[in-house]
Length: 225
Image (cartoon, rainbow, N blue to C red; front, side, top):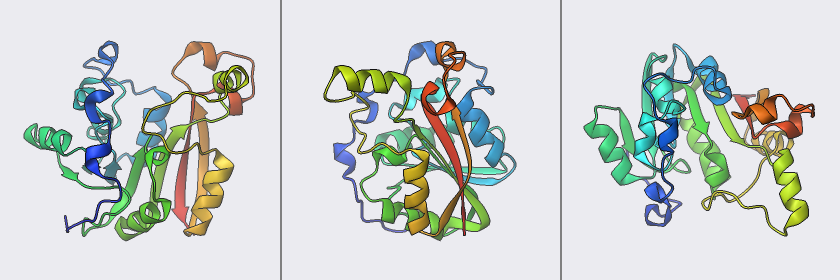
């Protein structure tokens, strides 16, 4: 990887202070999980770059819901990139293909069929740098696959009624709904081509509410116009 100027100082990220959930650990990957199902559906059999591949705590590699772990079993090739230097060193020691870098400014000197940003974009400061970097590394006809929290999730609505602020991950910088991501992506030459919503919780999946508010997250696949 070429020298990179970091937009976000790696020293300021929460890293493994946000601990993995031991109850999610297991040998069998949760292939039917909404996020894994969507991302792997777009990335299977392709050459893939996974941005934010660690997910805070490197112990998450033991999780049944870990995206990089799932992708590693279904892709033609897989490279990970993350802002956690210690986490990347640990992944490399385990034999994974992973590099230390900033998703807002990277150039790996190669093209990928699919670039994955699972629960990443809401952490960023520089959207322009992110989209420019993706363009540099995305093959012709390739896809950018994004997952992000649903700001209109019904529990968030309830929290907004009860409090001035809705609590979230301490590293988040924004909320993005399908409309705002579509408009942001258009500024950088991308088109939002596929959208789905999902939740891991049965209480949400079976609740008789419109999909736009019943689910915790939503996922989109973007292509260059």
